[in-house]
Length: 250
Image (cartoon, rainbow, N blue to C red; front, side):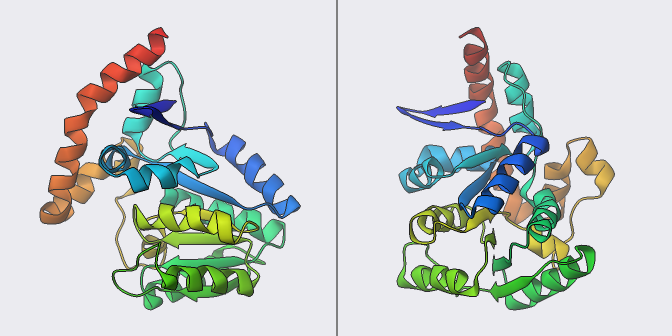
């Protein structure tokens, strides 16, 4: 599945968890870093508007579908992929890390949320070693000197996997910078995944997620913040459907 932005193209290049787990395990075993992004409709809106975000996405090694609308578009285009939300990847990726003795760093959110997430993960994943929990300053900029210091601390910690909970586009931009400065680390952008895990945000019930209505559940819970975002997402759907049909015919 692919999305076009003028002459630039973003490709969902990992179709499902089986393919992702194989690629990540191979990179863990070889000590090769990576950047993993989870694309959704909100990202498509931002990608259209933000050249810097597009440049960061272009440097992601692995891109998966975060959200059922991306999956529906992939089926419409005749290039089906499975939904792999960043929040759902946290524990399975930590299990892969534990199996291959790869250390883990948590970056983003708040110090309290990261500590709670780390405690939960260590209880759920035997053998997991979390060596760094780091919450950057408010207004963190992935191009700033502080970002360089964050990446240096990740590298010095010995982590081979770094989960980024900074929100888009900051987490993807930091991952792209990390690919240049710390090439042995795998960076995964997980959004609110660590907040959910540590109990600092409440995720939609499983049955709501199963029917693809997590976005509506979140919008109802925080209409002032998320309502406008989802309206912008809905506004681009007709154009994306047309693009998917053209892709199918090609």
